[in-house]
Length: 288
Image 1 (cartoon, rainbow, N blue to C red):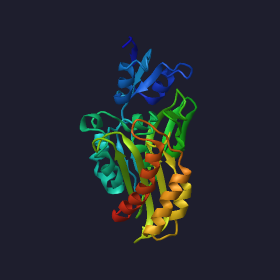
Image 2: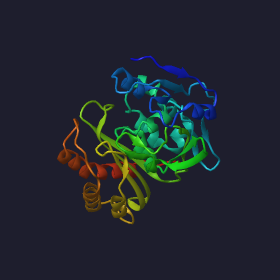
Image 3: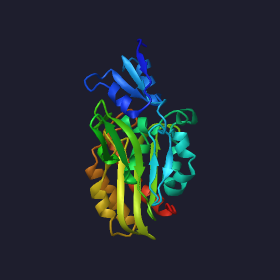
């Protein structure tokens, strides 16, 4: 690796001030699990890294009286996985994290870095989108709140400016909604997925009032499937409805081929796994 500087600010304001909107070689670093791999492969050669480790309060997980979860961007995946508040309010996150990479990575990788990296193969973003989560972004002009589903602009691209940072993740109260995430891998259960599908349902029995459906890994970015949601809304989750939902998903998702499968293969996976994700969500007890 080429030499680079390390800056260690003590506040988000100071960190933002160090970031240069015109210089892509100046980057923030949280856990560094993805960034260090890019540096070792010489894909990215920074001149300065802005470490967020010295900023207090960025690893907190708090539960609001209304059931909303607020999660700091430096919270590790392991901390998220073992949080009693997260398990109570959004159990699908805990279930998802059990097959997110391995324990060594989860002990270091952070929530903010996972989102800011923009990798469409990540397991957490589609789940957060299905839950209706949002992020608080801080920059030189102050703070703004952004739904997670509006964060991703394309393949490894987000709408964040180079001098903006994720300051907080917010997960709204889920009430009785039931959620699930399923992924298909070509290797072990914790491998990068060829397809990910996240679903959140407002349902009574198998009667679905409303649905949020998100596809990832097979697309250039995690993407909500509005036509699929429309098929499910107001329907009973029988075999025919689930088959129509699968067909709607295949029709509206723009599938990409990669080393994990062809377009035809991933379309067939999506056609089948939308229904399986809905069935798994219906089988879950939901959040409190």
